[in-house]
Amino acid sequence: LVGSLCVLREAVQIAVGHGLIDAIVSVLISYPNERKIHEAVFVTMRNITSEGTGIDLFLRKETSRVVLEAMTASTDSVIAQLNACCMLWNICAKAKKDPAAIVSAGAIKQVVRAMQTHMESGEVLEMACGALWCFIDQSEIRKIELLGCGAIDAVTCSCLMHPKEPKTLEKACGLLANVCTSAQMAEAIGESGGISMIVEAMANNSSSMKLLELGALVLRNIVLTKREFAAEASNGISSVIKCMNDNPDAVAFQREACNALWALAAQSEECKIRILALDGVTVLMGALEHNACVGDVQDAARGAISQLALS
Image (cartoon, rainbow, N blue to C red):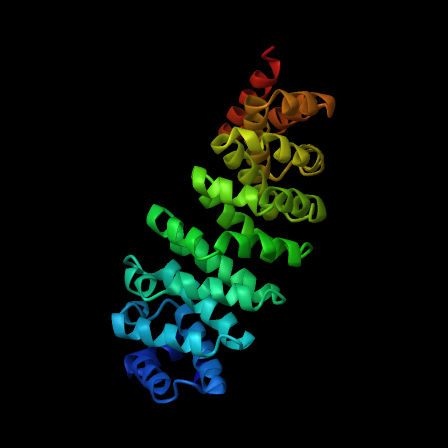
């Protein structure tokens, strides 16, 4: 009942003001192994945090510990893990301060465990990737922790398990794009088959502009970080060029696509030859003409054209 009421902003504010968060944390402490209770509590916490109310209360050390212990106790419950991962994503995205307390309590490891346990659930994987993406953004230390607990394999496996679920793939690509600027992370992605998974995801979901944008960003970042992955990444060139032709008005995608082609051409002669063979210069000229007032697309398209013109 409380969880249902907490979809309303006013109800959340009233309930939190009257001590709801402390009350439901007490419930978790009193019932440490009751799956059904944990499921109901996590639904309530998801709804509370989606409104951005009382976020700082969730970041208290003791609250963080209790919440993550409940996640661990209910690892096998899809409902509990789905709503807990969404709750953690909400907390990280809406917190006014760094969510150090909940990260220190083991949030990253527990989210990865949720992914590993529920690979069949695209929704769990979507929320988990979103939470991880938010937790590690601009934090090199947390990216290292991500690598240490098997997250890269879990993310690439998510792409393999759900090849036609754009929302899951979008979050997976966003997370990989964020981490692959590190050489160590790029190597882990390459070793886990992540590059081919991204290429396949782009080919299978050509109507998802956000996925295409993030996929192009992954290809760009990974070849700039590790030149030796250019050959594998070149398998995505045909999808990038085709989708540029098909979606001239998708400005964000056009920018990332031009940048990806620029990076691929700069890092590999083989990539340059493939781009030229697919009439990439004409496509890039089209991006220039169609986005005459968009500076970042202009810069990226000109850079790619100039790179292709180099002998």
